[in-house]
Image (tube, rainbow, N blue to C red; front, side, top):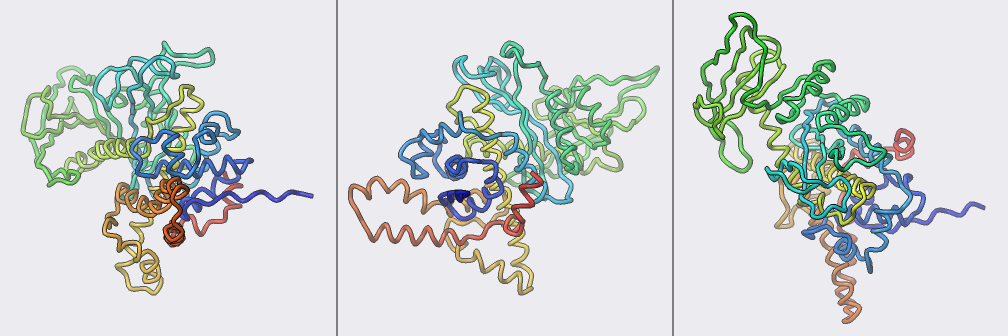
Length: 450
């Protein structure tokens, strides 16, 4: 006789709905419950996502179970990544992505943590003891989606089984992996670390991928005979800035000898001829056609994505792991990426819902009415950004988080009416509909593909 599998305890409707796609990856129901609870904790508003604080927020007596899940439990981080990428591809469909490559680093004290060394930390702008990874994100219609990350292993930190790989080499591996996953890459954006790398540019050219990359002011270009470098006239354009008015900037093309398929541009906040100015940037691209009026705005997406990921890191706890072995760190980062995708899925849904509410079909009216009550909350954000999506999801999980935090007091000072009221409110929150892209999928088919 086969013993039926125990049903996992529920969290909040939209989290349970999302996590169902991963359920068959966990043979032990307790591990699956920990998987869901960590998503709930990472989405919560607690400022530092340490396991003890997450445990209290999600209603656990202590963090031992979460710590075991992160460090010792039997589950495969590669399988979780595969399902996450499958879900991402499912959501994006046949739409093309703008791929952004970037590294991110965080300061870490001591020498006990794997691959922590004194190295350049890009987001800090200086050399410091820390850990660095190369990350890839997709942009589709204004929403960012997490794709892949790879840890950078400094030479002095290599273990016996490790092979040293530079950050550009890791970036090339990421590009190849995404192509194997059949993501349709429209454009690749990267900073000068990758723009100055022959390996990265060669890989992009061989794959016939369009790119816009930053280069240094002293970037060398081969010229022959009497060829010379010349600058076209500055052309003004309007640069959109996050939560600020547009800013007038200037761009001009730099031509080395005869114009070739790879082109070079200088961007400045003013008509400045000084290439060493802090307010000037240089980019290189293989895009064709009349691109002077659009190239700068396209490249600016990279800065926007970099800023957005800093938000993600801070909000979801990328650097809040309290483990020292990379096996556990990688698991933590993958859980952050999964939580990131969960928010992106809902951001996509909020975007579609806004469009639907502007139309007049019967189906659109139904879609709009489903979450209309939730949107009456005075803190509900009508924006379609990732951050506004996270804000709204936090409002949905708020009653459960508050209930968990109040439980110790309710055991000291019982209040049946408060308990009943909070339980009823939590049940209402569970009515919040998740993204239809997940609701309508056959999970058996999903598992077989993953």
